[in-house]
Image (tube, rainbow, N blue to C red):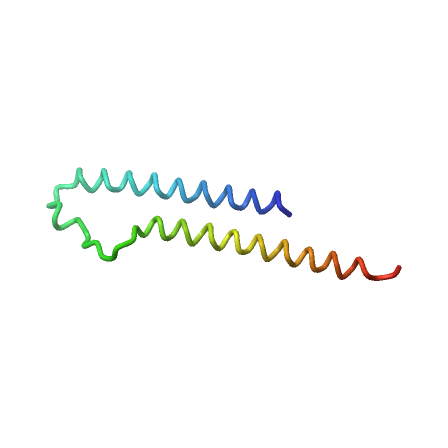
Length: 85
């Protein structure tokens, strides 16, 4: 179970890293475009970096899911340990 979880996290991390690399390539393309920089740039709003918030929420959710799975497995293990076969 833990191996499957680690593989899923690794795949998500690779997809996240690939998305960031593609976004960097798009920004280079935007600079090469003949549109004015002020027209191409979107207005930034907020105090927090959206990518940092997205990463933090992903890892928080992942850790919470892992803790919940382990807690459920331990509860099942304790419940089945009291049965008399």
